[in-house]
Image 1: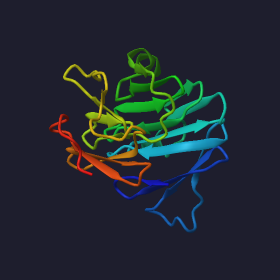
Image 2: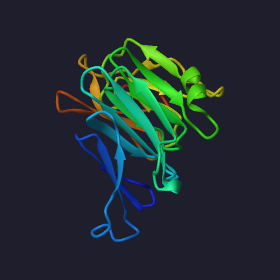
Image 3: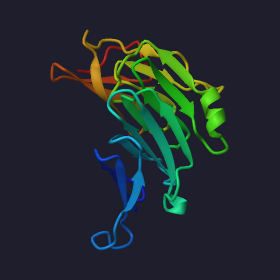
Image 4: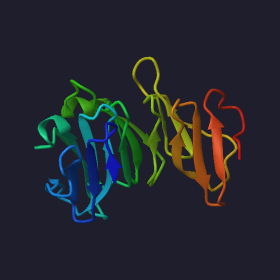
Length: 212
């Protein structure tokens, strides 16, 4: 489940390959939802951008194939504005400003520009793929859309509009951490470990050990 920042739209992903979107400004208990279809049965992610014009959905067949679709609220999600295909998707999310797409596959983590004026072909050519990260199921962009984390690693957007090589966060356990969450001011990053411990990093000083 995800809800848009204005509280107008509610989206629910399901295992039947559908995403159902309700307009909460109408009478959602009466009006049927808008149904968005994927060709694959398992929808694993649905994310609104903060300014609400976009909804990102991702689906996989659980074996070999996956796709990401971008939809616009302005046309009541009539047709996807873009579709990106992958050989399996472990996880996917979109930045709060709607400018970046992050996708994890068994081979790489990709950060792809999808902002206004970026065509699907341009996005494919400008995307950055970082290899050697395997399956990443939980990931997050910071609220200011300038940092990205898959839990164990942190990426930073540089002044040229490209993502620097990721750095491994210091002080985490050998098994790593999961489910990254950024603070609202984008300064702090928290993640949990398999040891039932929460780690919190100050992103203003990445050399400092985390609070535990």
